[in-house]
Length: 127
Image (cartoon, rainbow, N blue to C red; front, side, top):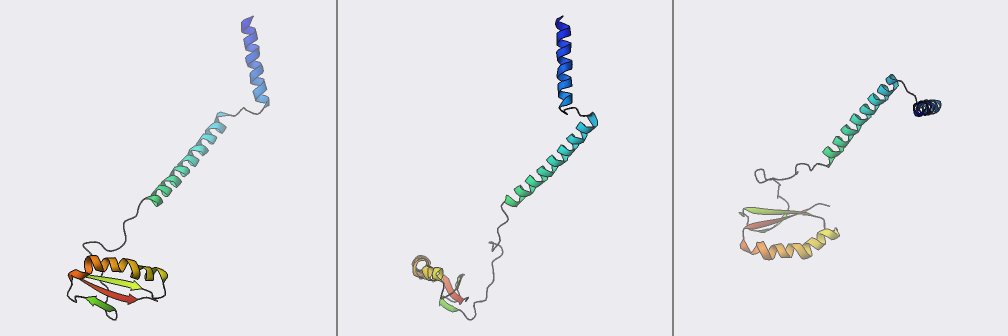
């Protein structure tokens, strides 16, 4: 008797779900799984592209083995002409940040490094 009730319950449950549209063929399920796999691969490649964009880039600029060569002609100079280090400052006389550099940072640089005679300063105006 219990088996009959169990079978009726299982059949009733199956009929109930089949009426709700939950029946799919194995081909439909496989097709849906393949679509999900393709979507997952697309997401993985997008995430990898984002990771690549977030990776730190190689620094751009001078390196110890490749110094930058800048013409100092036409610029106001101060210091020894034969100094091993030349500090070239590109400035704009109307720029408030350049003015702040002149008032604060440049005085500190002069106090620390300017009195040794091992540095030449060149000022280039860039309007």
